[in-house]
Length: 122
Image (cartoon, rainbow, N blue to C red; front, side):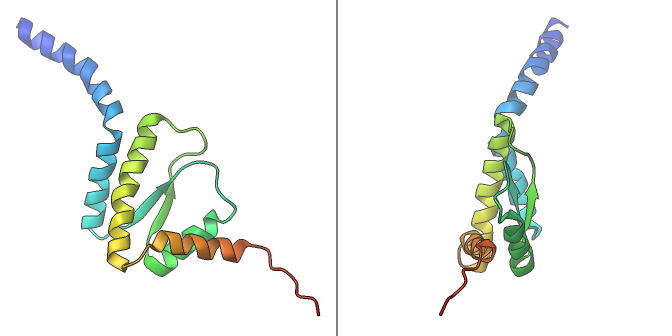
C-alpha cells in the first residue's frame, strides 16, 4: 500500500518534469512518424521575415512541404526544443528526398522575389 502511494506521488512530480525536458525527443519522434507517412512539414517560430509567406508558398507549391507557424516571438524552452528536434529530422528527410537543400534554395528564391526591383536608366 505504501509503495503504491509513493509510486503515484513520484509520477505526479516526475511526469510533468519529464514532459518538459523531453521536447526535443518528442519532436524527433513525431517528425519520423510524419515522414514515414509521406508528410513533410517544417515548424516556424518568431517574428516573420518579410519574405516568409513567399518562402512558404514556394515550399508548398514546388515540394509539397508545409510551413506551420507554431509560436510568435515568445517561445518556451520545451516548445523551442520540440521545434528544433522536429525540424532537424523533417528537413534532413526532405533534403534527402529531393536531392538538394530545398530550404536554402526556396529561401534564396523568396528573398530574390521580395527584393525591390531596381530601375535601369539609360
